[in-house]
Amino acid sequence: MANITIKKMNLFFPLLFFVINLIFSAFLIEELFDASDPNYGITGFFTPITGLISFIYLKKFAEKKLNVLLRVLQLFNGVFIIFPIVVFIYGIIIMIG
Image (cartoon, rainbow, N blue to C red; front, top):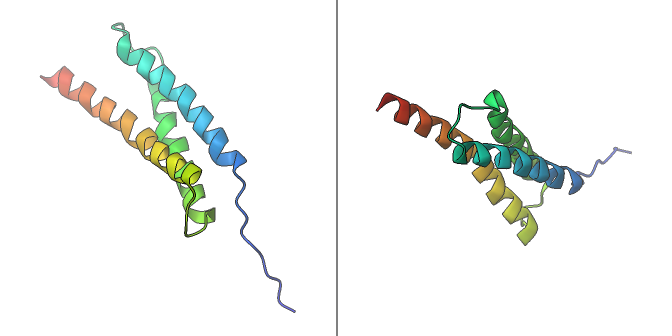
């Protein structure tokens, strides 16, 4: 008989990535408020990486119809992916102009 595997999503991983992204985003936001030189350097780009991993995980293992929690997590993943990149580009524009 054929072995049937069922994709079962574990909600622990997306929530763990959400908490990690909140921590890294707090560092990035604190860096935006601070007027000194950058302190965290490349760690600001861990947020889009973990956001992308969580986004792909939810996309792959979630059912076709997402519940409210998964939709909110996907929304935050999109924000976590875009926000540091926009801040980086905005910083470059400010330095040029």
